[in-house]
Length: 114
Image 1: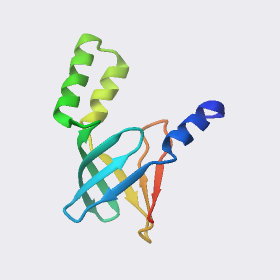
Image 2 (image 1 turned 120 degrees about the horizontal axis):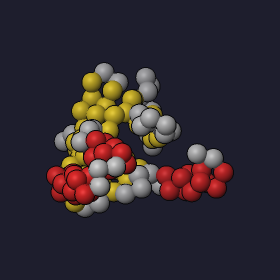
Image 3 (image 1 turned 135 degrees about the vertical axis):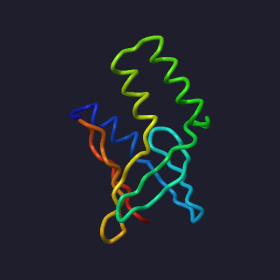
């Protein structure tokens, strides 16, 4: 992404946050709010989204499946596939940054510990 589009993306992500709780839950805001659970294996962090935009993830997946069935385009298939997977991230060796692993063709997002 470059030019004016890159500036839009930067502005949208400027206030991105993620908060981890001891009960293995998280709350994150990227473009939209989401909640879920997390699991750490080594430095890999799996973020399983349970709520997106205030909706239960099962409802969100059902809507995406309905969209795909109505229009089986590659875009709808990709959206359905992505919603069915946890977000994956990598914790830095010093524990100060968490980088979301990017989707193909996308840039990673880095969260810094405050």
